[in-house]
Length: 77
Image 1 (tube, helix red, strand yellow):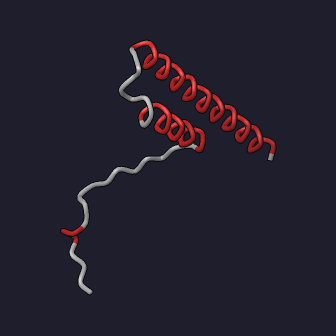
Image 2 (cartoon, rainbow, N blue to C red; image 1 turned 135 degrees about the horizontal axis):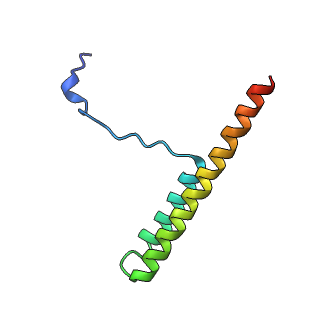
Image 3 (cartoon, helix red, strand yellow; image 1 turned 135 degrees about the vertical axis):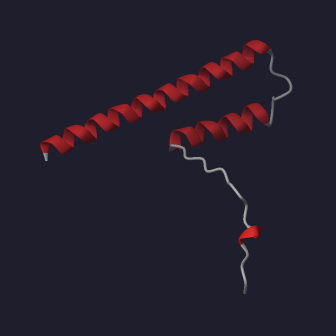
């Protein structure tokens, strides 16, 4: 079988997420975009954006703490 590179896409998108980010994205997509996308008012959209920012902050803070713990363990050993 002969394969031609023209048959492959020129680029692709790769999304790398933490488990927390994936869980948030799934919940937000299922509830907000699928169920209520057309019926959200401005304040509700802002509140969802706020919750998304808080979720990002929690995930980021957890990653920072884990990195600090790993560095501390490396210094011990």
